[in-house]
Length: 226
Image (tube, rainbow, N blue to C red; front, side, top):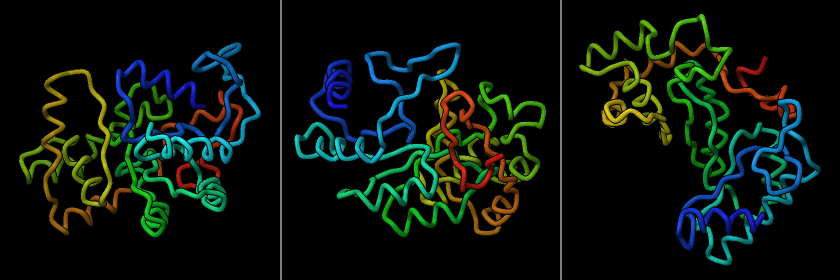
């Protein structure tokens, strides 16, 4: 693992990372290829995510990382990791948005002192999610648009404000300067009644699940798993 970290440090021209994440609990085949594939599917390996975590803990002692975390773990996987860990993950990066709110799972993180980072805070706005097609867009949900009108905001900004109101970091992704600037407008306070309205639109819809291509069953004990 450390050679990969060293390569990242070199690419970024820095001596340390503020946060280093294990992106998946599933192992890839060992080698220099970032995402080893065969016939369009990930070539799996035999690494254990607990062993990987132990190696990540060691990077804190060397100063190459300031904090370490995880991404895309189920509750059972996280519980197993915690039972072996010397360091509790600083953050867990998960799919989370008003259509996949996961209140029980996020409350578990708060109890353990693990910060939630929301990726895909706009739900199925990302066109790579085939399961999110032909059902309308999260940021065009009628309740979200109603609240957006009240505050003079757009649907994306309301979705971000919902995540912030829940104490999460929100990670919108865009390469368009106008949208990047617009996303900063999502940092505003929702009134309690509006937060309750947003909590009521949870559809338990998960859009990112690469289980079929990764040779690993992700999210098996979480909401939105099909």
